[in-house]
Image 1 (cartoon, rainbow, N blue to C red):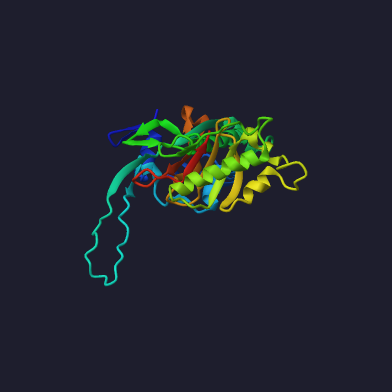
Image 2: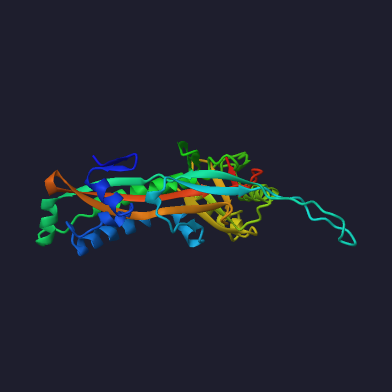
Length: 323
């Protein structure tokens, strides 16, 4: 078993990481696997990581990411929030002494856990692949990568508020303490619910965000069961779907389905860095080491990717939850 205690490495893998400044590329050598074999595995991992990962994809596409540091060398991310200041003064001569405010800053911490899943090959399987008798089976690599990216997506949407470390808590869009709540009167997939009712719910969510002085643009995320509901006609004889009608609301730039939202839970989020960003301490990566005297090659698909949901110091937030 490889582990660290009080900064000391125990085990060959831990020794290699510590000797290389916790750089995981030290575990991606060509000692056992050839370049083309690494390429096969990496391609399978990347392919799996792109499947239906709407939260990760949207944050990356919007540039709402924070990285550029070695997440393996850090366990928490420290950050600040700031208070507001009073309004500007108004008079005719401009010489009346005004308020001299100072912003107040509080420090908070975000845990940076490693999200990972393992798989392995025997040395005989690798040798068979090199002899051309049987291609390297990368299905386990795909499954491991899928589990990792699904965990990241789950944290983004459902949260992981039971996970606490270093004075911080890992929140998502659904369980963040400062989220604005709007009551869902009737489930969107209920037979009595009309397209107009659903649009009214979205407008109420938008207003809740505006009341906290968050003015968009917004992404709307719905649970899996609502996907086909949004494809229904907005009204009989009306030439648009409910989804199309929602997208006509000013500021709503996207309507997406998340498989990790709880049933009958809808999220509206302002897509700006003061509301949400994806902290990327380590992009999804595969590392390798030998065990059983080299007879087995173990792999770990791993990532340090967690959402950072933020609010102003007074608790105002650009996330709205309809449930």
